[in-house]
Image 1: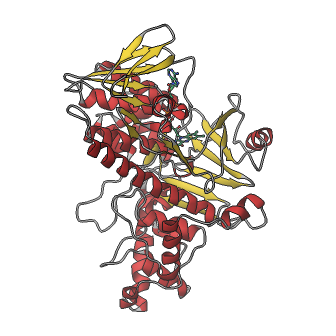
Image 2: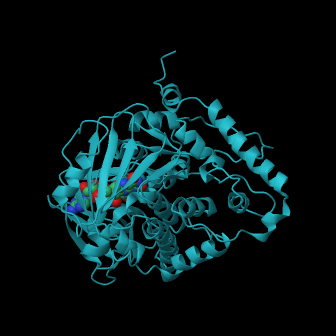
Image 3: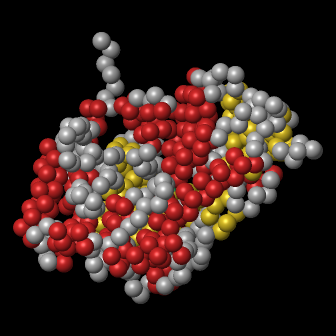
Length: 502
Ligand code: FAD
């Protein structure tokens, strides 16, 4: 690599490639050359339509106007994810964004709820979660809270058309100077001395040289694996689903402001409402059901007529052993894959980009930088993996071999400890800056019937009347707040309406 890094090449133009190029174009405007290579002939995975609230930070950092973004991507609002059939065949719960209730003194709300529940005086947990109440009422609004409000703000995310989002970011990046080269990469050239990647060669013979390469080539990992043979840690013993079949269908009204994840006999199905259609997919284990059967199951469970041929995607859940190797940084599917049960892949792209910007080298890359980058990436994805495994491990679908196997599998040690600690004392500890917070873990654990034997002793400081009043205040405030919000669809139609010429 030259003394001063000047040229960054992004290999691949899916969601990961264009998010990376857009962010680099936004922040590395002067003195850097950003080039993205993509192949229309190969195409993108074309799924990835549900997000979590942090996506708004990315859009805001790029200065993207929310209304324009929703118009451009046919997006809708998302307040959480409904899990149907996971805790038991007829069970249903929501992992909603935002806090559960509100804290009182030192304690998270759920300790008070556990105490009231044991006395038979608590409503279901979801009634103390604003996003849950609003989502099931099909409500949405940008909630502005007074600075002195005791209630939490209402976080939200989006559902959007992944192809339209990539196209939107492509225009954004190109308008800010990022170059785009169309062509199939057929060779990755390594520097004879350093072993770093020196250039990509395209089918037409064109050579694209660079100092730093971002591998956004998808599952193939053309540079990080194809050229550098970095290695992959396989997690399919914990997450055995290895296929997804996806199909869009005609949308139905109202557009629910939440994603639905329905457990099926050998996997699960997603439903993502967009303005112009509904996205659907069946994630399954090919060891337990054939591709044909899985496709037939999906087609039998759609809201409306299928709008395209079903598309089969094959994957191995896991992570790249080092996401930064030599002068190649893997972002997106080339870095690893966890099924989209908690909509975390686009988020991982975003944090990969943040880290890349944080660690942008000002000359030759130091091993210490690379090591720190990789440690941070490992920590993040390992914790997300555990959260996703929890949904499988705590299933209540007795009698179905796929689910029986998952309920009885040995768990990663940290996850097993986490479940044991919650079961005993209702305690969840969020370590460092891991993605999922106490509210997320509590909703999934309780939603899947992991109920603690005890609560925090300080929850006994309130007398019964105070406890009742506290819970009632929270539930009443949330139900009143949600009722005041407009209907999601009409709010969105107004908010994202095309501006009329003055
Ligand atoms: P791709 O989309 O595969 O892009 C790869 C790019 O590399 C393409 O442009 C391709 O043309 C290019 N390329 C490859 N080889 C070459 C070559 N030889 N020459 C030139 N170009 C090449 N994430 C979420 O956050 N939420 C979700 O709801 C969600 N659902 C998902 C459902 C499924 C079934 C799957 C598989 C993934 C889902 N994801 C989801 C993940 C999300 O789709 C991806 O993280 C995201 O699309 C990024 O993909 P990518 O850009 O890394 O790869």
